[in-house]
Amino acid sequence: MHISSKTRRRTACLTMLAAALGAGACKDIEVPDYNRVPIPELVNAPNRTLVDAATVGLVHNSRRDTPTACA
Image 1 (cartoon, rainbow, N blue to C red):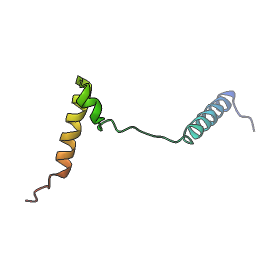
Image 2 (image 1 turned 30 degrees about the horizontal axis):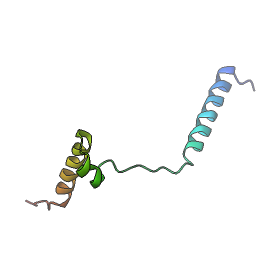
Image 3 (image 1 turned 45 degrees about the vertical axis):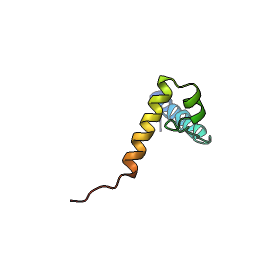
Image 4 (image 1 turned 180 degrees about the vertical axis):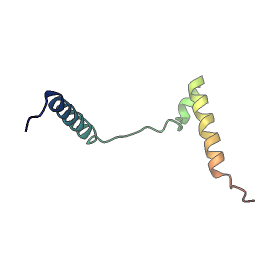
């Protein structure tokens, strides 16, 4: 049975892609909480970014904690 060079190339590319994805999946993924603003930084040196993040966090929490009305 004769396998074309295009099929070999495709198989090699898929194998390398699978190996790269497998190696990348072994890392410990830690995602920072972007909605939690450090309070001392917000009090001592507020800037636009910190205030925006604090506002988003407050709105998110107020929506999360508000009971929904069932009609």
